[in-house]
Image (cartoon, rainbow, N blue to C red):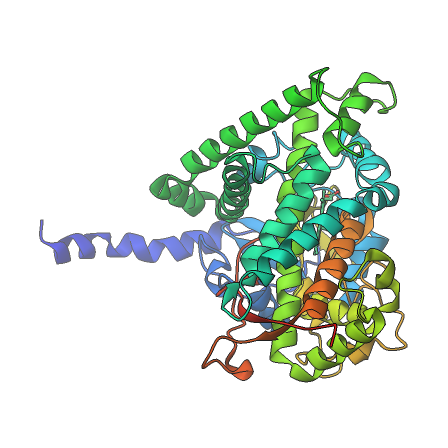
Amino acid sequence: MALNTLLFSWFPFLLFIPLLYLFIRRKPDGRNRPPSPPKLPIIGNLHQLSTKLHRSFSRLSLKYGPIMLMDICSVPLLVISSSEMAREILKTHDHVFCSRPKLDGVRRHSYNHKDIAFSPYGNYWREMRKLCVLEVLSPKRVQLFGYVRVEEVAYMIDSISASCSSVIRLDKKLMFLTDHIIQRVALGTSYRGKNDDSREFSKLVHGALYTIGLSSAADMVPFLGRVIKFVTTLSYWHEKNFRALDSFLDQVVKEHTDPNRQKSESEDIVDVLLRLQSGDQFGEVSLTKTHIKAAVMDMFIAGIDTTAVSIGWTMAELVRNPRVMKKVQTEVRSCIGKKGKVEESDLDRLHYLKMVIKESLRLNPPSSILLPRESMSHCNINGYDIDPKTMVLVNVWGIGRDPGLWKNPNEFFPERFIDCSIDPKGQYFEFLPFGSGRRGCPGMQLATAVSELALANLLYCFNWELPAGMKAVDMDMDEGGIFVIHKKSGLQLVPIKYNWES
Ligand code: HEM
């Protein structure tokens, strides 16, 4: 049959599809739903989104408002773009929106949603979260692991010193730093230098983040996603990666239960979890090996990239803004003098550095959109009806750049935080880099401690230049990534050793 005959014989059916769609689309049910951008049959609003979801949502919210109901291949998606609406979701109605959708893409790596970050709201999550906040990532434990941060930052500074005056990939050094800090905090050891495990392990963790991100994005477009997963063999790689990480964690648990094992300076996270498993201190849920592996996996998946990426964005903003760079280096160097390194006890005096970090988190929150939440029951927000099981995305990036909340919002201007009580701890809904409410980030204290110490030392020990021929104004700040938004082109800089003795 000729191609045009085939097309013409199908043409009436093609016309029929939009009509069928109009017929079967949701009939008015008397409920007042949030405004929605116009949609297409089958794909809904998918065609209005780019790979930079936060930018697409910000653009659409200018027209459709701060609470917008989208339809992605028949999956309802509530997009939140203002501080007032974020407060409604994360505080006023936190009890309704504190669950997470069960995305198939994360099922494997979260041990069937048995971890903290991706498990739905319920008894199990409550107990795991309590354990995480009160034991695993408690302020006391973060403080106890101060020596790990000091040693690992010193290791990074030494390795940068060895490549002084030449171009380095600072983003990679930072990833190495956070990777080893989290490894040592969670497992009691980092495998650097002993064998090749560490490189293999980092590769697995980054692979996991990548395949989780891609699979979850694919899950949001049900049919198309399944086709994409099949064609790209994504599920295979996802599964393979999970199995390798799982057997690594099996080995770790086995080593920790070996009676002849030499204990590290402080109890690591696996030690803590095993201790709780053997006692009866862990509420109603009994801790199994799978729960322990799931909790540890979360630390890696949630903690390594976010922290490294956030330090990287701060360095990129500083190199682009020489005035701020000079001011913050003057503060650090005059506070520290000829001591040779910044110690944790010095950090409280570095007020401008803290403002620089806040300003960078405002402009470039690593989680530009909070991890997805899901409504557990019907709820009324600002007069709009929200159905149960609606997926909710809060666009933290868009809120941080809202001109109604921030003067010259795209400018990197840390001084805006002088005499300003706004902090990132989740009480100020115009600034939510760590989220808020029951699901807010439990790793915030650890992340802040690592970021401040690493940045203070990078700024104290080196002056920073761009590779020859590059100008600060030309710096490529394009974003990449799905769950964690990083600087797409990496961070290539030239460190020049600063002589603090002169
Ligand atoms: C600069 C670094 C970090 C940033 C920007 C960040 C940001 C976030 C955000 C936005 C969320 C979702 C909050 C919400 O839904 O309201 C989150 C959740 C989480 N983060 Fe972080 N995070 C960082 C570092 C860490 C670290 C170092 C750890 C642990 C080692 C960690 C562990 C977690 C966990 C376990 C969750 C899930 C909490 C839950 O669902 O109950 N994060 N983080």
